[in-house]
Length: 125
Image 1 (cartoon, helix red, strand yellow):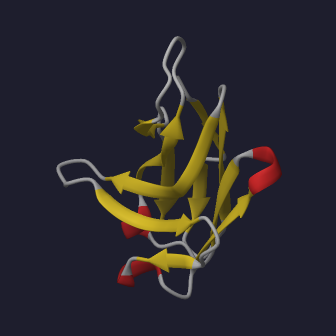
Image 2 (cartoon, rainbow, N blue to C red):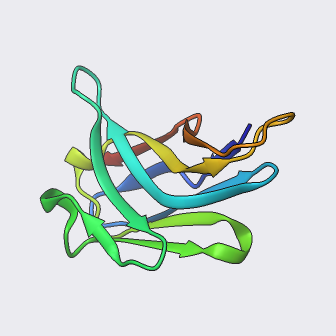
């Protein structure tokens, strides 16, 4: 089992910045991709940004030029630097981690897809 812990959400005024963090922990796992999704009230959960091992960031059109995703492989942590925030960025942000793990008692690896608990980001006008 891989555990994810998110932090960094809060309340900011339009034009402000926040930095979200998501740290993964567990045993015998390899992360292939980490990303951030968000879900606003009454809306579908949407992909904001993701980054693959050895790759660069990929972003939704709505956040390009404003958000930056980065990884610290040594800490198994992914960050989302959010600048020039807009009221429409208000949502619960969820960390997502995909990879492979060896479960207790298992011989073969298996894919995993885990979600963080979510952190609220609120941007006021």
